[in-house]
Image (tube, rainbow, N blue to C red; front, top):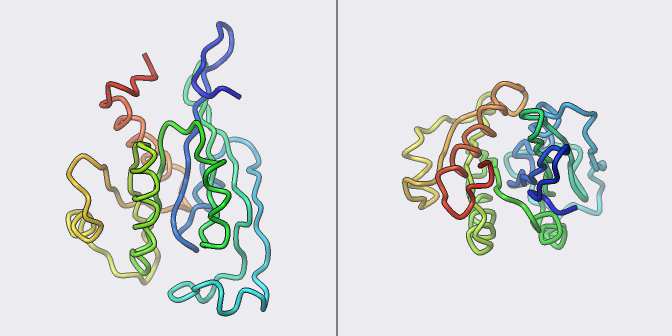
Length: 194
């Protein structure tokens, strides 16, 4: 599919990547906002992942995405977003290149318990030239930080939108996607909505 190409009578479709570390809330976010039954490729963590997957901070997690999460949201009659959630573990990074191909933007979900997981995601999309927003998932019991503290910790300039959100709540995920769309519209090269 040629994302972004417009044919009269058909809605324009754009691809958005939802990335982040293991257990950050990618699958939950895609499932919360998707208007269709999302495609989820979660599998149970087994003993084979012991010593391979870093579960520090997310010890309660029992499943992991092994390929992708997929969802869809219709913004207007002529505008559809396809959401592709990435696997969060290093052993599945080979999938990212295929998922990221043709994406107009990415949401990087940050977990303040494991903020260092964002560095790879930020570097990856910066190298591709893909615009990003950082969505800080507010887990219960996790320490909260101000936006500027997170910006400084991630070494991001003021042009990258950062916002707190709750991956379980549709309206909260919607605000993240709106922030990404607004960010995209400020970039002359990506004035895709005109």
